[in-house]
Structure formats: structure tokens, C-alpha cells
Length: 276
Ligand SMILES: [Zn+2]
Ligand SMILES: [Zn+2]
Image 1 (cartoon, rainbow, N blue to C red):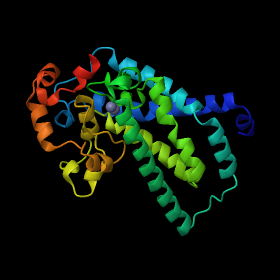
Image 2: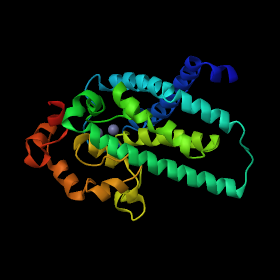
Image 3: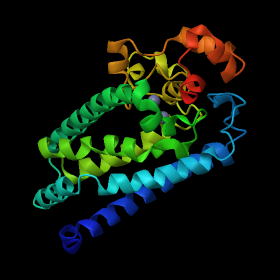
């Protein structure tokens, strides 16, 4: 590992392959369970009933995601190498104070990452940036688990910038970082699952409504001026961009994307953005 730390290229390559393997394991497992094995069993949980990704979209989702893995792997090499040198000296033993500190740093990391993502996400929806930076991600109108990292490299760079910076200021231990990276990937996959894996009423529950659900982010892919969060709905609630039940009811009544686009209420939907 020391030789990898000395060589930025080797370090970046090992990180990139690790991220890509993590993506294939988690997205692949979700795809197999919901889209292959459980296609019939979970039919009632399909978020966009009767709709499937357009031909070739899943293949493109995988290609963009692999490219993003390399952007993530090479991002912040300097910060990660410094962090790893620092972390190698930390105790790995269990203590109650260490556990509480671990949970606190995890929550802080998640909230700050979500805050950065929310505002960055709103920025890349600006008409001047959308086509160049964020359009690739919204090519998935009916997302599949493979869309978890499906970003244009410019967006992948924007997404990757924040974690190395946070690691410079928050004392994150290796176990907390590993848990965070795995959780991040699992939520990225769940947000694009296409099926609702949670219990009925999750989005209205007094506690869970503050978490991003599979329905919540899927809705963003159809109705892109709502639901910009990554893990939580705090910012969407505070800034008035959170979806409402009435949005969903109207959306479900629409027979197709073109009908949705034709409706004045949904003027900035997926189709209209892609046609910009
Ligand atoms: Zn998405
Ligand atoms: Zn978006």
C-alpha cells in the first residue's frame, strides 16, 4: 500500500477499480433482484408502471458510470493520500466515545455532502449548464440501478470535489469512511432502482419523509424542477422544491411524457429539458 501511496497514478488506478467494482456489485445485485429475478414479484412496486428504459440507455448508463468511477478515483488524490497517512496512525479499537464520534462524523459528513449536492444540482439545472453538464444523467427518464453514477465527466468532477475537501476538516476514521462510501453507493442505486423497496407511506412518515426515497428521486427524473436532494429532503422542504402528492397524482394521470410536456404545469419536464 505504501508504494501505491507514493505513486499518484497507481493510487488513482487502484481507487478507480475499487469504485467500479463496488458499483458493479451493488448495482448488479439490485438489478438482478428487482429487474431480473423479481420482475414479476415486484411488479406492483414499479415506480413508473409499464415503462422501461429506452433501448441502449442502460448500456450508456454503465459506460458513463465506469467513466465516473475513474473521475472519482483520481479526484482528490492529494487529499486522500494525506488522509490515509493520517488515518494509518489512528486506533482501530472499539470504545463508546469512538462509536459516538463515528456516528457524529458520519451524520455531519452526510449532511454537508447533501447540502453541497443540493446546491450543485440546482446549479447544473440552470439552462446554460444543463445541456453540457447534467443532460447525460437525465437521459435516464426511467432510471435503472445502473444510472447510479451515470454522469458526464464534468458533473462527475463537480460531484467528486466535495468529499476530499470535507476529509481535510472532519476527523473521519477509516471505518466511518468505508461505511459512508458503501452507504453512498447503496443510496445512489436505490434512488435509481425504478422500484420502491420501502414500506407504504415511507414518504409521508414523520421521520422517514426527511430521507430521499426511491420514488422521490425517480420523480426528479420525470419532473426535474422538484427533488434535488441526495440523501435528505431538508433542503427541498426548506427551499420549496419538495414534491407534493398533488404533483404525483397529476403525473400519474398523464398518459405519456409528451402529454406531460404539453401540459403548462409541467413545462420544464424531462422531455422539454432534453430538447433544449
Ligand atoms: Zn438521478
Ligand atoms: Zn437533475
